[in-house]
Length: 155
Image (cartoon, rainbow, N blue to C red; front, side):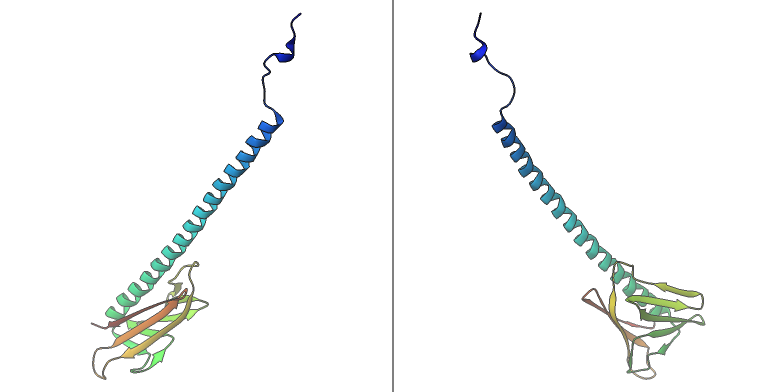
C-alpha cells in the first residue's frame, strides 16, 4: 500500500484565504474612495454649471427687457431700489427678489428666473444717467456668494 501522507493536496490553506480576503478588502476600499471622489467632483461641477446658467439667464433677460422698454417707472433717477419696474408695450414688468429667487412679474403672472439649485441673496437696481437723457439701469445681484452686475440703457 502506498503512503498518501506525502501526496499533493489540492485547495488553499487558511493563511492563503485570509491573505486573499485582506487584499480584496484593500482593493474594494480604494475603489470605493475613487468612486466617492468622482461623485463629489460631479456634484461640484453641476453646482458651478447651474450657477453660471442662472446668472447668464438673469443678465440676458434684464438686458433684453431694459433695451426694449419704453419707460422705467422705478427706481427714480439717481435712486437705488430692490425692484425694477419697466413698461414694455403698455405692460408693466417687475423684477424683484422673493425667497432667494429673482421673480419677473407681468399682467399674466410671475416666473422665477433662477432655478431651485441657486439662491440670490441680494438684488439691486440703480437708475443712472442725466435727466432727459436715455434711461440706464445698473443691475447687480449676488448669487451663491458670487457678485454679478450689468449696466444697460434703453435704445
